[in-house]
Amino acid sequence: MGRKAGTLFINPKRFGSLHKPCMKEMAMFLSCMAANHSDMEASARQKELLNACMESQSKKNRKSWGSINYQLQRLSRGRK
Image (spheres, rainbow, N blue to C red):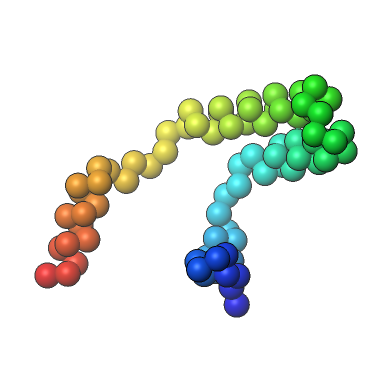
């Protein structure tokens, strides 16, 4: 079973095993915002923690998928 978001069908089993690196920090930030009625100054510490987590994730070396031309060539090879 999946969920339908507009006209897009989302299979939760496919994306359920993805690594969610900053989920804890984001949940803490959103719960602080909800508890303080969207007061940014009261949630400043959680915002800093979330920003630090996101910055550390962006600096990690990610597996490059190559250029768009490479991907298009790879797809066209399969159709021949």
